[in-house]
Image (tube, rainbow, N blue to C red; front, top):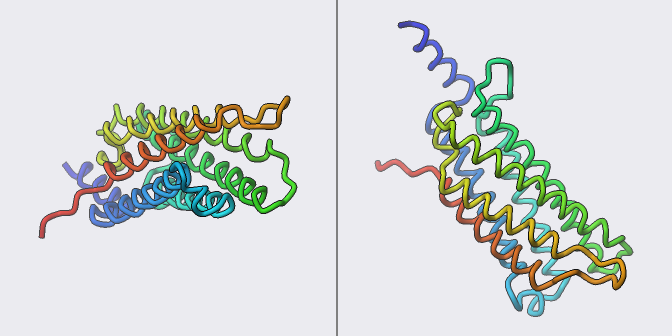
Length: 225
């Protein structure tokens, strides 16, 4: 029949051929992988003592920029169609997951930048550090839930390989760990100190490793030449 053939041609024109989509997914995955590595490095025991608090916060900030760049690629450049009247539930879950995750990365940009400036002596309210961190972690958790939901509808996605079970569940585990870290990093009004600094660092470290695994598992396989 002519209709399926036309639909396939239209899909290729709008979202790119297989090789182009593979390249875009690879850029997205490497961006998340580099950001995750930098977050894990920043939370590694002894790193802040070795390089100093300012350099440690710079590491987090640069990592958050890689997260944002990767999330931007994921949302706008890979080929995910905007939700519309004819969208399947899987397509909607997939797009909203990417959109909310992008918002979460922007909040991490704010949080890590505020922490960096604060470590240099700039007078910044501590709430400007942990509140965006908490909201960003919540956004990641929501996005991960939607990603898991999208994975149940892989056959309806723009690229069925864009979501895999291992990748999405590692992403969910990372979001949970980041959430624990954000709660532990809340500053207590009575003392002005972090509620549980050790747990905050541990949550960040574990979460970053989970996101690293998720990013590497999402890398498209190279075709043998």
